[in-house]
Amino acid sequence: MSTVLLCLAALTGCTASPAPTNRTITMPTADGERTSLVHRPGTAGAGAPLVIVLHGSGGSGAEAEADLGWNAVADREGFVVAYPDGLNGTWNGGACCGTARRNGVDDVGFLRALTSRLTAEDGIDQDRVYAVGFSNGGILAYAWACTRPGDLAGIGPVAGAVLVGCPAPAPLKVVAVHGAADDRVPFAGGPGAGGAQYPSVDGSLAPFLAADGCASPPEKAGGTSTWTCREDRVVREVIDGGGHAWPDGTADFLWSRLR
Image 1: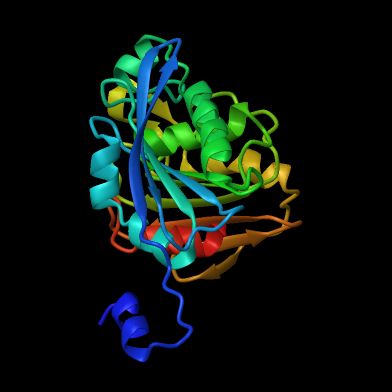
Image 2: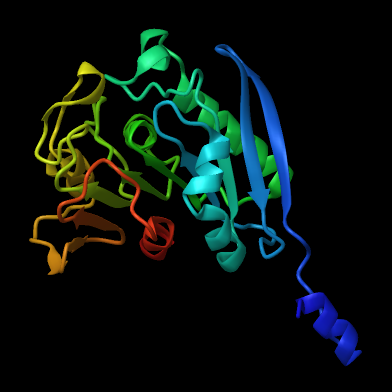
């Protein structure tokens, strides 16, 4: 029985959460009109966190919403989630990928403008903005954290890598999920998708470990390595035998460590 029906049946002071709302945002940018789906749960009050979910190359915001499991986590935990669209299904994360990279699309600028709009329209907490993404989307999450220090509270790249200069990122939470057998963005680094030369996962994490003053070895539990240094945390989750994929339960895993 729904919360609303239980309240009516009891005829007591029960208050149901408002229904979630879904909308599409359209924004003009220097690279053309940009769109994003936005899911705001009834559980998301004023000052809620924002999670921006970035699809992989060839994907879309609608596919990310349908496939990656974030709406259910947002409904339970009370945060706003946005699913922007890359131009022609790709993001410019540096040395990859596709049309967005070739045309020098300012995707980080688009995401910053989207965050500003959602701050105004949804009252999100600018100190709790997170970027998560798969593959090309994970590459862009890294690029955002590297090129605009202080914008984000945390990133969750899945099967991604750093493909921009990253000399001085701000300390933030980083939760990297990667298949050990990934042949498109190789775990150990090397040539991969889009003709790019990829750093290893540890190489991608190194600037963020340095930013947080991490000198000690990680605490290990199974395939999860966690560095707890100053106030923030870096996590590496290795999927033994895993390929280039978004594993089941990843949204829950990322949020449990980013929040």
